[in-house]
Each structure stands twice: as structure tokens, then as C-alpha cells.
Image (tube, rainbow, N blue to C red):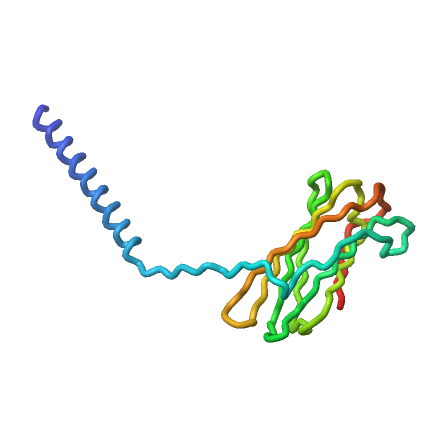
Length: 167
């Protein structure tokens, strides 16, 4: 019996050593793999930025519960193939609406008008946050961030939030 226990301990010890060697070999293989690190370019730039945001009665339902966002595009030296605008509208309560507008072959100098219907339903300060992804304007993709705050009136009308974008 004593020989059997010693043999079992040796087998367990060999098993543990094998697992440790296997783990070390796996880690070395992962570390040895070639990797490429890329940092996306992020900037606060004037090529895409929020010019204004305000409330109005855009859908003519009698309530000033709609939000107009004006985003200026300025690409004098480049012609991006696509600009994706990810936008978040945060209400005073913390409720956040988010949506994406994609513009293909944006005009070199223009203002994109975005109508957000039935979203201004609370009083207090609203914040519009934008993350723009610009593709095809030089090397790879460039990201631009911007935000804008405004204070709409109290009250809102009926209807589901809706977004329209146009130049």
C-alpha cells in the first residue's frame, strides 16, 4: 500500500508539472505572436462639428417639443467617402436617445440639419453629444467628438421620437 501511495503521488506530481509546462508553453506562444497596435485618430476638429441645437415645433403639432441639430461639414482639402454621425441626446432626467446618420460623399462645405421629433419633453439642460467617423479622407478612419448643451421649455406633445436628416 505504501508503494501505491508513493506511485500515485509521483503520477500526480508529473501531471501537475506537465500542466505547468503546457501553460508556460502556451503563454510563450501567445507572447511570440506578432501583433499590430493601432490607435484611431481622435480629434476635436472643425471639419465636422455641432453648430447649434435648439427646440422648436418642427412637426407643427402645436408643441415646441422637437429638437433641431445643425452639424457643419467642412472638407476643403479632402473628399471623404462616408461620414457616420453617432449622436446622443441626453435629457435632464438622464434619459438618452441615440441614433446614427450616415452621409455618403458629403458636400465639401454644408450644414446637415437633423430634426428630432417629440424628444424635448422635460425642462432643464439637454446635451447633444456627437462621435463622427470619417472614412476615406486620407489614411484610414478619423474620429471627431463634439457636444452642445441647450435648455428647452417644459412640456411635450404626443408622438414617438423620430429623426430626419437633410442638407
